[in-house]
Amino acid sequence: MLLSIVERILVPRKLLRIYQKYINLESSPIQLIDVFKKKVKTILETTLDKVPTFKIVAVKLEKSFVVNGKSSSTLSNYLRCLAHLTIYYKCSTEELSETQINNYLYPCKNLHKPPSESFFKHTVFGLRAVYKVLGLKEKGQKKINSETPN
Image (tube, rainbow, N blue to C red; front, side, top):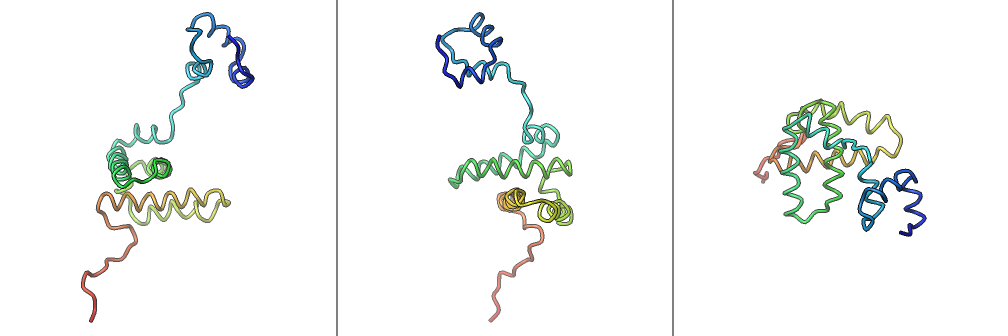
């Protein structure tokens, strides 16, 4: 079986010999990487384990994104940023007060360099999306009268 240069770099020789000896030779060596890779939980998986109520929010947000035809990458970015916020306070996003949210967002905006700008924006827009899906008023948003003045 001939391997490409990339596959030789990705798969150490010892693992490759084990793979060739004990596993189906028709399979790709790239699959070997998946077999031997140490499974590390993502921030989203960790959040779902530690804060079970976050799963309800995540499922509702996912359904909303699918129905409205929004991007799955946007959804994953929002959920990842919201997972950080949820883990920080150990409660779901809809349970947070305006003060808690502001205390979390302040360092994201002011204490870090520009790469955190996208993290900040994804967190804010993720919160907006959650509040919209759950039918909650956005934290800090003033109540708007339905009647217009004459």
